[in-house]
Length: 186
Image 1 (cartoon, rainbow, N blue to C red):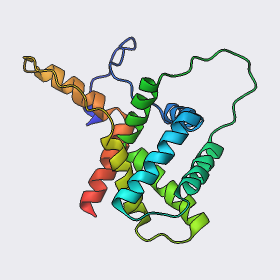
Image 2 (image 1 turned 135 degrees about the vertical axis):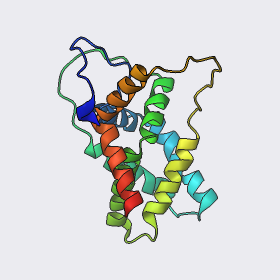
Image 3 (image 1 turned 90 degrees about the horizontal axis):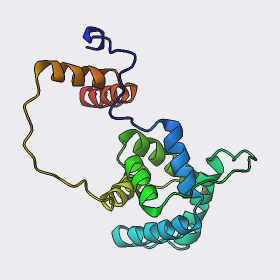
């Protein structure tokens, strides 16, 4: 499909820019470095585990240890003195909810969380399923997009072709679509 698409002019601006993996890593690491977010997230994770599964002794300490492992994976800041605007809680929530909505990030984060948990606590039956359920619970806390009803003109064939070509040219969409098709075939 991509080969059939007309080449866009070099000056064409893309309307939607998905975050790059580096941007997602930056957002996650910024959130992981916030003591306030760590405290709230730790409490919420332990509360959700207790609600849906069973109470885990020393849950707070275990989650804090996992949180510290995640922080340790973050790149170390370069020693450059500059003033940085601290993201607002709304910006952090937006970034985390965007990350939580990505199937690719969910898969990688779930695998890494289970690897770290099993490294420290031994085999955990259905770990990926449990972490996936916890991920979905956290994602459900994200604000839902507001629906605005308005009349929309039916797109022209040229507009449809443009949209399909933009989607076909996105490496991230291509990767996620390929993974989903492979899951259906398997």
